[in-house]
Amino acid sequence: MKHVREARFLVPGFVALLMLSTMAERLSAELATVSSAIPAPAIVIDFSQFSGSFTNTSGPVQIGGLVGEEIAWSSSDSISVIGNGNYGLLSNGSWNQGRSGYVGGFVGTTMRFTFNDGPVASVGGFVNYAPAGSCCLTIVALANDNTVLESIDVGVLAPISSPGGINEGGFRGIVRPRADIAAFEVTGRFAVLDNLTFSRTEATIEGLITMVKQALVNGTLTGAGNGNSANGRLKAWLNMLTAAQRLIESGDVGAACDQLQDAYLFVDGISRPPDFVKGEAVPALAAMIQAARRELGCL
Figure 1 (cartoon, helix red, strand yellow):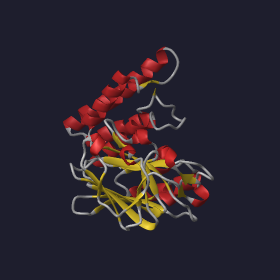
Figure 2 (tube, rainbow, N blue to C red):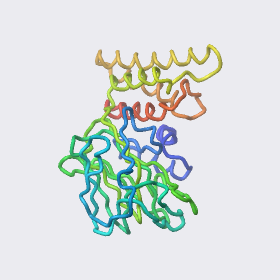
Figure 3 (tube, rainbow, N blue to C red):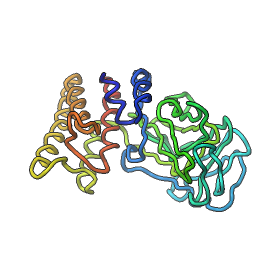
């Protein structure tokens, strides 16, 4: 039951929950289904510099200029597109000029995003595709030597359904404990991607606590509940994290794992037990706790 419970935070849908629970041990990363699960500070490439008409190319094309990063987009075929225009996705509707720039492939096309300024710990994008049964989108994280770090079948674990929608889709990404993702690949059936989002924040206990402090300052994390109970719950949750940090420093990893599990259960978005905190930062913090637990060997 543990893996079913933990999977529910990231992948909605009863069938997907069961599938993900059976595969959880195979993953050393988290599948992010909301952009806020990418830890701060996150960088977003919105492709707005490619708002003109489509260009058919296999690349490589430098896409990180507006954010000061050297990031190359490339494709396995020369008829892939970068730019703006109409793009049919069969039953999932279509994308058009309203997206102000994006990239797209064709049947079986692999689009690659290479981080030439250094590897990242988390990456994803707003995506869609032309569905056919349970198929049609896989995301892959690659190391510097092209070793596959993670390969996630989105069509099975977190399918996107947007019947007849215009410019609709969903965020799908990968959150790893370490900044070791040198490239991110998307393979699909007429797959499209916008708002490539990434972060180099690693899932250490120090990084997690720093994220929490930043979220408290900027108001994206608060206590859940009414009146004084909200402050009490927030303090109790923060105490779990600081206790985990002390235990790690003292070498008691097993007890630290228990503290982090408790911290996760009070931020996982499931009503029982009720969450102790709320706010925009919660998905990223939950994903970071899980990534930290994997890094420590808790999972």
